[in-house]
Length: 252
Length: 296
Image (tube, rainbow over all chains, first blue to last red; front, top):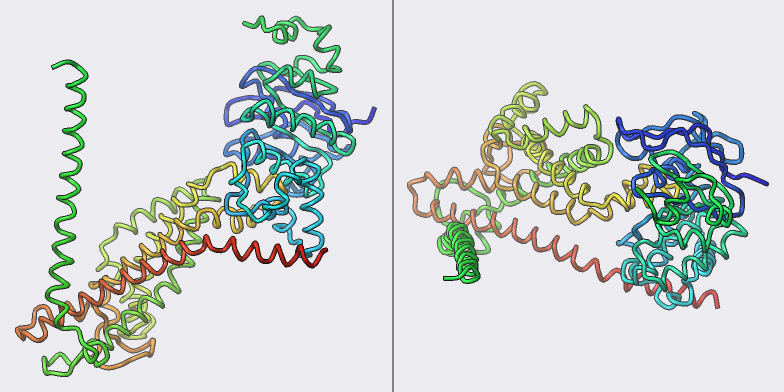
């Protein structure tokens, strides 16, 4: 199996707080990997280390290795800006740019990196919005504000925005936690369609969601990776007792 | 009286108290405005606005050179002070999470509350005396710029801090470099606050008097040269106010009215500009329609 991202003895800190502890995980290529675990177990921090967004927070630091296609993204030759164009991210709360139209939001990454060719931008908008299953809903109001649409649409707009820069990996940090079941179902369908082209890592609180969409599931607890396996096996025959307890809801 | 009634009474009482305080705070403002309009309006005439000052109290003199002088002083001060102030605010907000940033923030606060006469003294020592320019427009502008910088920097910083972190992260996660994120996302989202800061700064320096005494000094003549002394509205008021001549006294009130109107006009016009920017979406729609029609 091909692995897109491999972490080796990854540790992440917020000041003195050690929130990811020696995690080694191998994220398979062109598959959906879910990361589950209770709040504060370090799952968001783990994926934020995979596109160097962790270090954006004040006082945050990382040790260990994160290999993207066998190249360490934390080596001194790697430009974090370049890493982030290859590894896109969608956040928990939809965060379209309020001063930009839907059109401008989708191509924000391209335009801010200097793309001026209207033809390219136009086609990127159509392609990304279609990929994000939003095109039919907004194609007649591309000039409307990016924050004037519903929360579910905003989140798909953010996914389109991330896809427009043509990343190889898409990290999703609890993308459905602020959405209703219908919008959630749309995003889950979308992830299925995307996995042919992209490697997807999704952090979720929702175990049903992990079971529904993920090919592989990782369970984290108190900053450590407890178990990582094929989703079906993980949910039916977990190896660790802790995992079984969490999955069956008998925790604490 | 039961507890519910007691709470309602307390609420009503607090509301009344707050309202009373608002009225109390408004009284001086309304009083000053009324006084300035009543005493200043009779002085206003075309020749008052276009003729130069003489200081003799003879008929036919005006404050034209003082209006131009104040506009020039503020213009040059804004030219120096706005970029420095805004960039300082950007630095402290976006890059200042370190000791140096904290130090800059501290000195900004100190400078913002500095007596303006001391700033005038500094500009005097630096420009008038050390650089040997003499009393001049540029010396006055430097003094005003120094007063303006901390105000602009502080409001810019606060405005940028109000921009949600999720937008910063959203842009960075798209692989947008830090400086472009700041310029194209953070500043754009915080622009209302930044413009307010610029306005506050300009309004504040428009009425500064003390530092101008030591720097721009005064001139009864028309002067556009940056190295010559120049008249200003606040100093005109200051000179005429103590004059025994009734004509000059009335002209002082007239100058005060003009000064207030200038600041007010600036405020309103910028607000209006900001407000009409929402009309921009129409322009966006047009370009989109043009592009669509070109494609099909």
